[in-house]
Image (cartoon, rainbow, N blue to C red; front, side, top):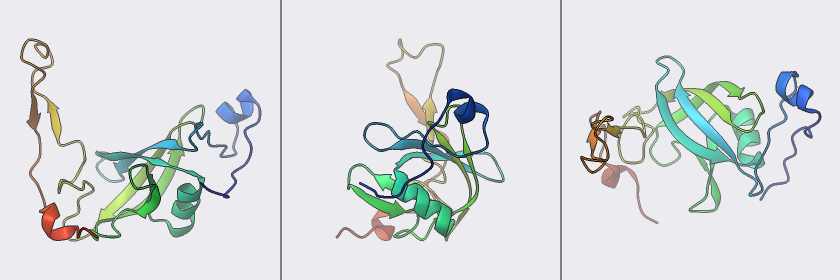
Length: 154
């Protein structure tokens, strides 16, 4: 996948309480990444990164992910124009999850390929009666753009 190398993971104490980024990529070479709006705190999306996409993100300051379905890097907004400018990168306590805080820009200011600001545009309609109501979900947002007019199939 990648030849980019981050510092080797050392002791548990250094990983959990130290001051060096030592990301823990899984056996597949990937690390989960949650992306959040830097101003509102809204969770925009979840994706995976590999070492190469993380290095590209840090260098370009534009969110870059690893597409598992396409087996390639993708810079968020390269097709849609809705770019995520990285303002902060955080890692969790054992450094096996990343959190990007981004400023989303573009005509639609949307992060979801389905045309919504956030990929989390639906919620379980009735948390207390989920099983009995058939796990119905409801929309919580309006679509900001039509994906058919933005994404061109190659």
